[in-house]
Structures are given as C-alpha cells and as structure tokens.
Length: 518
Image (cartoon, rainbow, N blue to C red; front, side):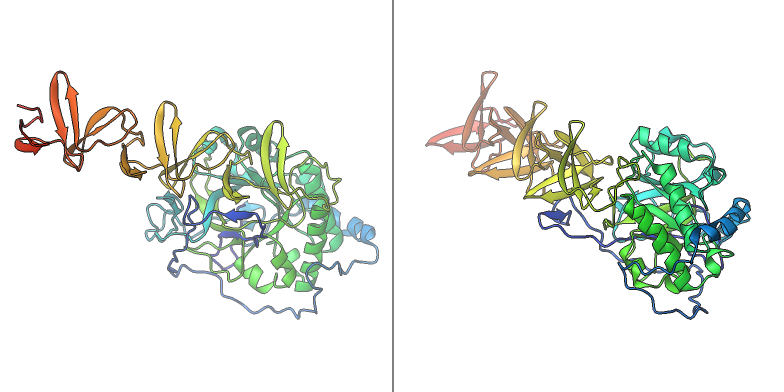
C-alpha cells in the first residue's frame, strides 16, 4: 500500500497479532530448525512524526468484544445522503495526495546511510536499513495496487517476496471504486501459490459507510482463498481522520464485525501516529495490526503483526518502487478461516481446528487459520507446512543454510540415520543433516562427508589421516586391509600406518610411505 506522509517518516508496516496457544502445538524454537530472532537493533534516528497529543476528548469506549456501536437512527438514509459523494473522492493522507502516491523523501535504499543489504535476508536473518537484524521477522512481503502497474508475477514468485497484500478497492461499494488491477493481481498470486491478503482504503465518516466498505470487500473476495487477513486501511485525513477517536472506533467495529461474521480474519492498517493517537482503544489490541513506520526499526510499543518499513523497495518483476513489509513471529485468529469457500455466508462461529484433508493433501488449522510457511510441533512430532499450507512429506527443507528432512509421515527426521536416494544420511537431535561429521554409535565411529553421505567400503583422508570404512560404514581400528595384493594396517585410532616399523601381535612389520607392508 503506498501512502503519503503527514510529517512523519514512519512507514513501516508491522502487523502483530497475539498468538493463541494450543496445548499440543509448539512453535519453532532455537534448538531445532526453529531459530527465533532475539537480537535487538539500534535506532538510527531517521525522522519520524512527533507523538502529538490528540485534540479529541475521548468518550468512555466500550470494552473489547462488546457490540456497543453508536449507530445513526437511520443508517440507510445517511448512506444515501453521504455515500454517493465518495465516488469522486481521491486518497489524501500521509502517503497520497489527490489519489497520487507521494514519494518518500527519505529513501531506505538510496539514503547514503542505508546498508547495502537493507531489507534482505542474510544468513537466515532479515536485515534493516541500518544493517541490523530485524528481531522476530519471519517473512518478507509487499503490498500492491494498480499504482504498481502491470507486474511480472513469475519474477516476483522467484524473488525473495514471501507474501503479498493486494488492494481490492477504496471507499463505498461501487464497482467504479474497485482497484483496477485487483482481479488480475489476486488471480496471479493464486495461480502461482503466492500467499496473499487484501486491504481496502477507507473514506468512512459514519458506520453506514463503514458497512458499505465491508460489503465492498466481501463482494470482491468471495470465492478467493486468502492466506492473510483483510486489512482496514485507516489513513485518510480529510474524511475518517477528522472524526473523534470514538467515532473512528465505531466505524472500525462495524467494518471488522462484518468481515469476521463472513468468516474472514480482519486487521487494521495505520501509521504509528494513528495507532498512538487515534486508534488507542483496547478493541484494536484484539486485531492484527499492520503498523507503518518508515524507519530502520518499528518503535510501536504494543504488539503488531506486520511492519511496513519502506515505500521505495525494489522487487524483480515490478517496474515501480514498492512498499516493503515484514511479518513478525506471531499468529492471528480473530474470526475466520479466510478460505473463501463460505461465499460470505459463514457466521464465523464454526472454526476449523486440527488436521484436515483437502484434495488428498493434509493441512493443519489453528482456530480457523490454516498454518502456512511454518514448522510446528504437533503431538510430539515436528511438521512443515508450505506457503499454501500443505503438509510436506518426503521433503528436503533448507533453512538458515541447514538441510532438514520430513519423512513419508511428514515427521521431521531427528537423531536418526536414513537411506535416501541411495545414500545414508544422519540427522541430529535438532533435525539438522550433518556434514563433515563424525558420528559415534554403539561404540563404533562413522563419518559423513561434505554432502552428508556416509562413507562405505572406502579409504578416505580426513584431517591429515587415512581411515578405512567397511561395508557398514564402520571406521576400522587395529585392522589389516588387503587391497590389490598388498596389505595395509590401521592402528588403534583408525589411522593408516605409514613410513615406519611397527610390532603387531609379536611380529615386526615395516610400512612404506603409502602404507604398504614392505
């Protein structure tokens, strides 16, 4: 989502949602393939909008989860009077001016202070514009609209982009306010298996218009499978932004409740200033937050699901600059399964949980949300689910420069040797395939080479010494080997005896420089 600046250089989207726990599920941790980022990053002092005090006098707001929405006496009448005027509105916010994107004056890429590897993954960690690790970032995404023109989605698929948030439209439920590239973009993501979500730019000034905007979204997403929530984009200053905090809350509740009741997850997009001065009610803490702050780090103090960190990103396949976002290590589940199969008729009360088989493939749901692009522990076994949520079987996974293998049951191979494609491999207690590795088992020693293959029936030089491994891969010690009519001896350490005399079982032998008995 490209947006304007108000006086802030905050535009980083961090959406963070509180992860609901499940007793049989453990998220990836540091000891297995699940390395969590715990490093902190230093603030580089890039300009951001001052934390201005709100001029609104906030009324006592309803508690999160209640439905105390102040509705006009006749919503249909108000909608008829006001909604029509939206057809000629153009986006005006900290990112837009009269519908045109405002270029960010502080570029995360061109700024001479920016790191050369800004917003990329290095050694398994995402790096900020200051060159520091972004704590808890687990996926990199972009958000797009018709402003980004025609996109080469095959190139995007092969880039480092993990997910896409697509603008479906703006304002009230008029076809003229559908995003011109919505259908093209969502179909492109679906056909290529790129995880996606949607957002709508809001002009709402009352709850009737908020309902119309919800209807707008539901009309467009019907039949589509979303991997990420529907986001309510709150940033338009001349319309929504001029209202009191309580009025904005009422509109947000109306929109989000409608989306949830249709069976979809829903969140809120705004910049840090809005979240700290306008969107302050505890209700917002129940929603996935997508925080925009263009900076080297997100300084929003509460939990968020995503961070929009820059609006000048470069992605192969997109000719324009694009917003860069990072998903944080969290989950969300506030009302729907996002599967698009309910056609808008699901009331959100019946949420899938646990294992599901769809089209012969296995998926796992947490409170209506399909687990995607993640390794998790379920009932004592680690599984991996790809970007589409499919449980992987007989599958090699590469993560942070290490290789892991999930067997025919989808279980992560741990502390075991396996014969795969004609070679024996060893996977340690964390599931890592070991390379250049000595393994000790039942008093015997084995060695796995640089490809992770067990040495069998061969002599090999390791760290300056020659060893011999038999047909079972056992390193031989105190062992006579006969080869091509010559005899060789491997001592108690398994080292080939060379260029010396040695007494073995009371007999003196002389060995050449090649190890042959002379």
